[in-house]
Length: 336
Image 1: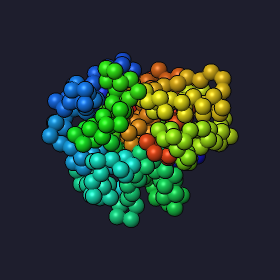
Image 2: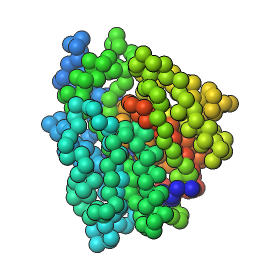
Image 3: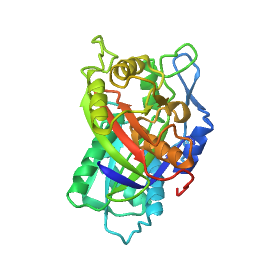
Image 4: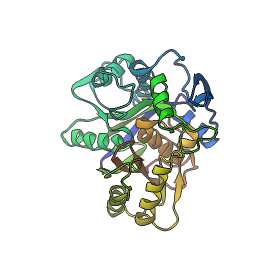
């Protein structure tokens, strides 16, 4: 086991708290917004925007604006105050190479803490730029810190595609879902954080692992899903049969082909599969922590297919991650 989840907080286009997001996703209350920016077909671009940030905030400032309230929610659940010891914090963000890459990204953990009003540990803060799979890397780093005696670690991620250059970049790559362009996704934004300790809580992180595919499937080299298949085989060896899988399938064919290959080989049988992107938009590096919030909240509220699940995370590049979670709260205990 890696750690116990003792509190969580989240923010996305479908809600401004972890409970709200879980309930709105359950009700499929997803409504993308048409933007004033237009794609190369001269159609309005659409995406899933979180509330409360306005349309003039982009880049680094938007990441801070999304992440700080999510972290504050998690800390409030646990009663963490500014007088407590500085908080170790790990934040997952997008991979390098996107047009919105900010030179201040290494300072993101401190900026989030400043906005949330909490001191961040100077020695134990990290920003992991691996996209979706970075959540698994973040959990492994948190495990190391907890093993070294750190009593509490906040782990999460934040991402937003709301940036004119990013949307133009996606449009040029035919990656925006639109009329006449179905091999694409609906961009979104969000943030989520889990507070991890040892002993008790809302759920357990049972397993996390990362690997790299030889290609992401968008190149001439075929993607055989070898890394993802190996990760899923190892996960089953560690935690047993997978009954519920949560994937970041977003409508892109390359990602769907890899998912089909890996699950067909490694999982087998009939499993429940949840694709939260269709209720959140693609939230990039925030996928893993947001999916964790959905899994643990839905188990607590009584509508999860199973109390344990596997998260399967595919970054835009070669990085792949898997995470196994288990709820430890009885149904009906709405403590968030």
